[in-house]
Length: 359
Image (cartoon, rainbow, N blue to C red; front, side, top):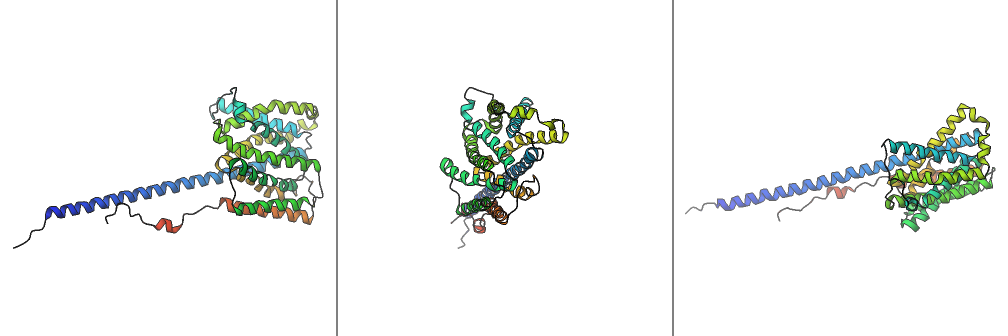
């Protein structure tokens, strides 16, 4: 007697196998799509980190050279008045941009100052003392001493943002500081006023980076609002300081106001003040405050060597030169440690998914 195959049972088995493979393929596609989307987001985030860091580094380099040219080569009498011009440039550019609806930020309110405090005070002090240090010191020594802001930023990040740097980052930071100390130990053009200005700037730079990061996360005012109101709130105090110190009168009597080459450099310095503020906030938004500080010091690699030839106030000594180069190489180490891209391990990519497969 022949036994007929159970077609119904076979059909169920075939259908179950088809459904199992469909589920498996669907889940597999979902995993692949999720992985591709994650990789795309990772590439986009990595690009933003690099692009904003490069933009900030280039801006910081350009304004340092331009400021040095205005204050030293043209012997402009007042770094306070120059900071006033940079504040005015930020207010004018952002005010026009908002009017033309190119950018947007909230209107001035009674609690606006409280929302962004203490950033305006830090912003003004950082600008003024930074310009003062640029005027008083040679560019190589200014660049070397500015690396102390890195250590201060690292400590503030740990205290305020609870961010603990890796061992490799700590080693590179200590290398930069050690090189700066070595360079300062044999600085033949020692200027106490310039050293004081730079160290105050280092403290304010560290505070600015950390508080910008914090305000971007909590103040709900946006990067353009931070830039505009920092400049707006500090313009009158800066004008008052410039007037009380006698710099305003001295500046108005400056003889090169009719020199077109000076006018171009002065206006470029004012506009670059705005660009620097914008690039600083962008870099801090997409990176850490410590990274922003170190990128600002990395541009000093170019400033360091260029400053040996421009400005005319660098005095060479072997110990000073060695210290500067140690600090430069430690900066390069930090760059490698921070911006090397973390690749997904091959094992992780090769692990197959078993979800939905029949047992």
